[in-house]
Length: 92
Image 1: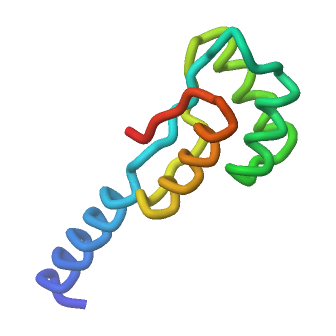
Image 2 (image 1 turned 120 degrees about the vertical axis):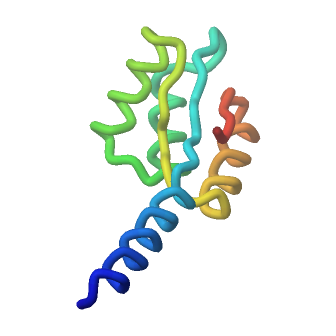
């Protein structure tokens, strides 16, 4: 591959990575139980039990945690589903 094609491919690869740099951040609250948050992360964000438990602990002790990364179009309905369950979340 010529150096020009390689440079263009590297730029395209970089742009593709930047497109999917959105995150759903889940925030701590004093309302929802650990079990409810864990179940929500499993159902909405496709977490494993272990992932959901770890994120829930981080939210509890740190105040927030990134629970899903990806493209905006994938994250928007997931974030909406978390909000509809009464959780505090936003896409950044």
